Length: 471
Ligand code: BG6
Image (cartoon, rainbow, N blue to C red; front, side, top):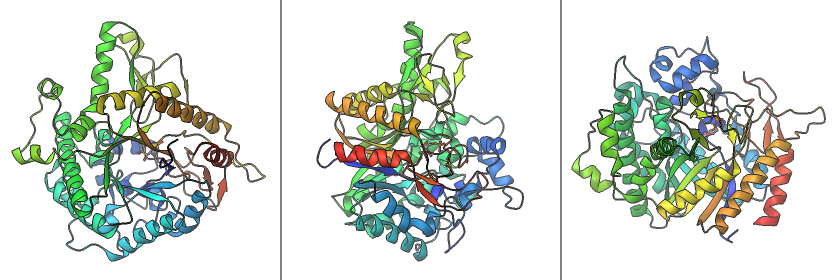
């Protein structure tokens, strides 16, 4: 690894903080997602159900308490620093800083919390990598404007950015504008706070919201550079190569088109303009976007680095029979690849796909890459000796870290790797605690019951040792 390589772990505010309604915090989109699986599945796609049925008496909402990081952050950061990492990915909850998103002045208590979190990271020499919007929007902005379906969101977001960039000047140098920006096409409520009416052209709405986010991201990039030229701004993709199931040219074409679904976003954020294939894509889907001439100027503010999450590759086929054999994967269902094992949640495990994904992204953009999420969600067991023997996670990480090193040998310019996640947290998609990714086990179950005790898993010691040898 290069000497200045950032090696760390990732977290996301709504999935760890809890204390969803204290110190002036407003309600966030994430706070409306119930634990109940069936209901949650409908909510992540379309916010109408979530908004109409929010009821704290009837439902359990996992982010309301999460893992109580709001109170335990000092201990948690100390434990994570103990891994020997030099960086940490955190995120900010918009509704702690601007409870409705429309105040003129930030909520001091919310800002104070994040100032302490950042200071705590710096105390241990951890470079903070801050995601400005990680699946989080003030509910007020969703109710009033329909979330990112409205151009109004751009100014509200930039107001947040202005506060963050000035408050953390000289302390934070790495920012990610939107977590997995392409997720808006797969989980539109989670990615953009979107709700749909019957018969509405969903794709029109999703791509319009994507356009506003892309403009907001570019304007934020410009703002960050103006406030502090030392700021590095990254876009972020939920990445993972889509393979053709066979060498049938129609499968190859289908894979190319599927891959463009993710590249669409980074093509704009890295190159500064819409890709040529967008015209045909929009024609086919009968999409007409509100794009002002000044938007195109703003989009020219391109990112400094490309960040990505990678959990698994995917597969596509044009053969209806093959299409019936589907498996899950981070909100993207995929044709089952017969060469790959799957996780407890059906996500295909493919370290070589990691190397391929990194190579393809670097070939395409020639921009530094930062991996900000990679890890295995699994059903861990705490033994009576208070140990967690997560050999499967060690195996996953070992192979993916080797693939990362192989990609560096291939010539990929990598600047960082953040494992997902440092500490067990509420799953973004399913709301479960039992879908664990952390190096630190947290004793809470799916209904929020438990002592909250933190336990170092076997993978904690393994990663610490790996870092000693490889960093
Ligand atoms: C990414 C998100 O999609 O995947 C994280 O950025 C999320 O927030 C992670 O936790 C794993 O997904 P899940 O749904 O298993 O939590």
